[in-house]
Image 1 (cartoon, rainbow, N blue to C red):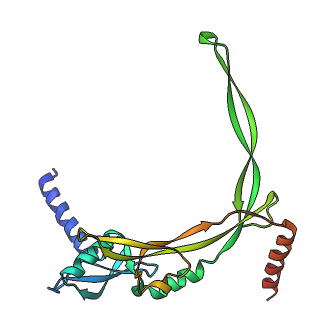
Image 2 (cartoon, rainbow, N blue to C red):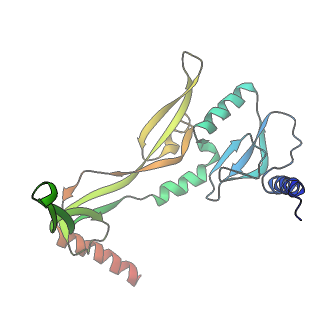
Image 3 (tube, rainbow, N blue to C red):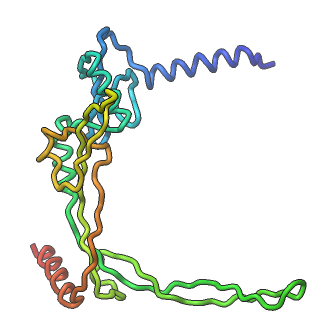
Length: 227
């Protein structure tokens, strides 16, 4: 016969062991401090935590000591999902190097819709359905798509960085600097970024010559293959 009370005690004890092994890390540092945490993609930040994993970040032994004001600022930064640019220089360089602009080309396609047609009223009411077709539009990076319309739009990445100031209530507030191509240029004045700090911008569409663009793009691709 199963002793359910004993089972519950063992289950709680097992959970604590698993929790301590996988999540909690022993730390003998007495001062107020924050440990370095790193995501698998290399993004780095400091957090006041003693967990092996914290919100997708892995704990490192490296730490910084905090005074009262630094602790408040760090709490604010982590609440707003901000990281310090100076802690992530190489990661940001890599991101900005990989986020290159490109063209998208508009194409058209036929979409099907079912339209109900009601006949009569009351008990004699019947419903028929007819199939109707209409033209819709979308975007592709494939210059050889068969249904291009002759319009294209340029797509590129922009970045936002932040500085932190105190308002008249002595509360921290964020001041953004938007529409940047390189956040490293303004890092001294705007030293923080969001964990997801880039946005893909679609610029206004423009007409273009499909034949000339295909010859240009396909010529570049052919040259790369030869090399």
